[in-house]
Length: 332
Ligand code: AQP
Image (tube, rainbow, N blue to C red; front, side):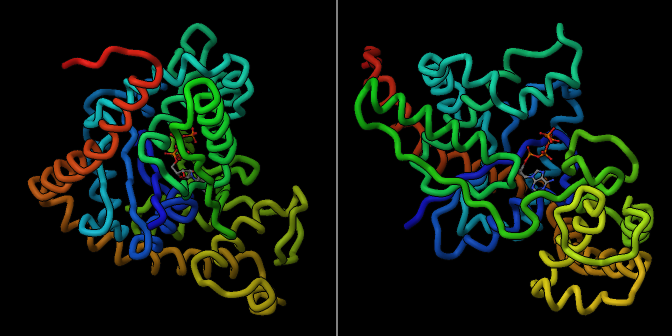
C-alpha cells in the first residue's frame, strides 16, 4: 500500500485553504492508502503561541479533522510531540543539512521578515528539517500538501539523499502530491497573499467553523478588480476573481468551460454570492460533526492515544535505525 504522511499546525483556526489544499485530499485517499496525519505542535511554536491557546487549538484541530472525515479506523491521527522520535531524528538530520539550504527556503524568508530580527527563532530556520524527520521516519511515499509546501518536500528529498549517500540507504524519497485546484487559496482581503492561519485581517479568510452569515459577509467584501469579466486568468489584476473561481471549481467539481459559461453575463456580486453558498453547503456537514466531537473530549483523547501508539510503532524502530547508521551505541 502507498503510505501517506502529512501534517498541519495547530497555530490558529483551520481555513478554507487548509481544507482544499490538504485535508480534503487526505480524506479522499483514506480507503486505498495507509495514512498518517500529524498535528504538528512542535512546528507551531516556531513562532510565538500562547500556551493556553495552543492547547485549545490543538484539541480543536483534532476535532475538526475528524469532522472533516478523517476516520481513525482507516487513518492514524496523532500529535507530533507524542512521538519523541520526531524531535530526536530532526537533530541528526540537521547535522547533515547545510545552512545554505535552509536560508533559501521562501517560507523562512517570508516569516522571518515579518518578525523583528532579534526574535526570529532558530526553530523557524530549522523547521523544514523537523518536517523532513516527520516524513522520513514513516517511509512515506506521498505527502499531500498545498502548493506552499512544495519547496519543503523537495528539501526533504535532498536531506534524505544526502543521508543515504553518507550513511547508506536508509530513507525512501517521498513525493509531494498537490491538488489540481485549490492548491493555493488566496486571501479574500488581498488575493496576492495566500490564505493563512496567522493572518489576522477580519476579512482575510473563511474558517471552517464560520457561520453562514459570516461567510456571506467575507465573500461580499472579497477584493476583485474594476473590470467585469468572470474568467479563469493568471493576470495579476484578475487574482481576486481567479481565486473565487478556483474555489468554486474545487468545491463543485465542474469544468472551467462550464463555470465560465455559467457566469457569462453575470456580475461580480453574483459570483461572490454563489461562491459563498457553495462554501456554506460544503462546510455544513463538517460543522455538524464538529459539534459532536467537540463535546466529547474523552473520545478525542482516546483517538489521539491510539494514534500516538500506532505512530510510535513505525517511527521508533526507524529512529533506532538512524542512530545505528550514524554510529551511536544503542542502550541495551
Ligand atoms: N492558502 C492555502 N491554499 C492551499 N493550501 C494551503 N495550506 C495552507 N495554506 C493554504 C496547506 O494546508 C496544510 C497545513 O498547512 P499549515 O498548517 O502550515 O497552514 P497555514 O495556514 O499555512 O498556517 P500558518 O500558521 O498560517 O502558516 P503560514 O504562516 O506559513 O501560512 C499544508 O499542506 C499547506 O500546504
